[in-house]
Image 1: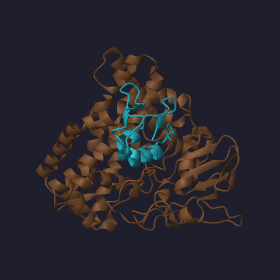
Image 2: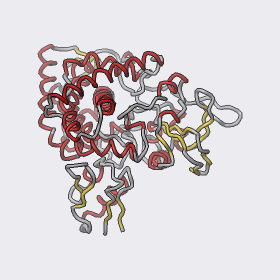
Image 3: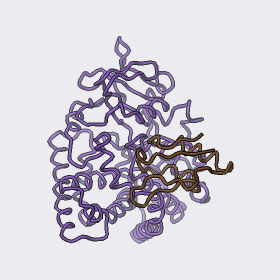
Image 4: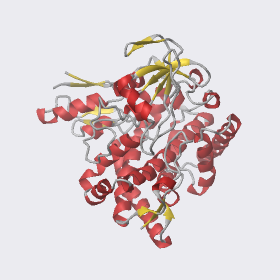
Length: 63
Length: 398
């Protein structure tokens, strides 16, 4: 699974960090998403899908 | 909800029971997730109650949050009160203007930063519990616990003196009361803005280690913008969480087996917070958006200029989305609710609110394992006349 994060439209709500903390973090400066692992292992797949679905701004996508 | 010949309804506000949204709204979520609605001033707009459609509207930038575009579903007075645009008040802005302000703040409210506050919030909470114990039962939980915790926290974060709370809590109440006149609401927001503008000027001269000083350091914003932002953060930062703590405790006291689980099993704390947020949905009368262009949604055509009211309460009880939605189940696996909204305006302080609630409920129930209402439940005064739902008082004993 590959993830893309668009920091331009991210609003820093933190839902991804709350849902999949091993894959997502937030910048200390402006709170926007930081991708810790753009190609997460299968064990993270369910959490990542939920994070993508929960993202309020549509900044995350997976393929 | 009254229905006209054309199938248009008016917005229902009367609740049959204290923890549930009006039954017609909940039914609507499944039967008519989007339907025409007549607004207080006669405007013909829409009401969205279905979870999927509510989420879709809130995520769609073709729907504006500019206050002067929206009509009020409840009273013409509310509509009038909403209309003014205010500097720094980024909740009432659209991107890219909104983005500019929000970006200056999001770094301050990250998940990590809010988790770091946990020990400090635990200390504040323990101090309130000590004071309650010292004073002895009965007590009003709103006054002694639910309101002080988030007020102390947001004051400290922003750098607002807690000793000034009488002034800003009074103004907040006036702003959130649905029956405040246009003049009363205007006076309250002007007083709050004056107060915070003075504070901002003071901090420009003497910076401290707080959020307002930190934002001033960036040098991007003038005093009016800073005052507007501070009003928004101060009001949003204490009223909402205070009502969740008090109303959430009332809901748990009314569901003893759920209360026992929260008190005795730390592993359900996180799901309890999400479930109480979903079940109670204290932002119970909106939000309202305005279509900037024609939009097709759920088989309906929303015309440019039409208002759309989204019932978060109904969406969070949508049976299509949640199994057994009318049941409070603190072990329900969190799957996403709309209580903090959705889209670019989703609550900035949500991670702070989560931390405060996840500390407050278990700490209260563990300190007072026999906590109970001091008056019959039907006598608890509910905040039906406020933009944010909750209880006016919650007399408890132990």
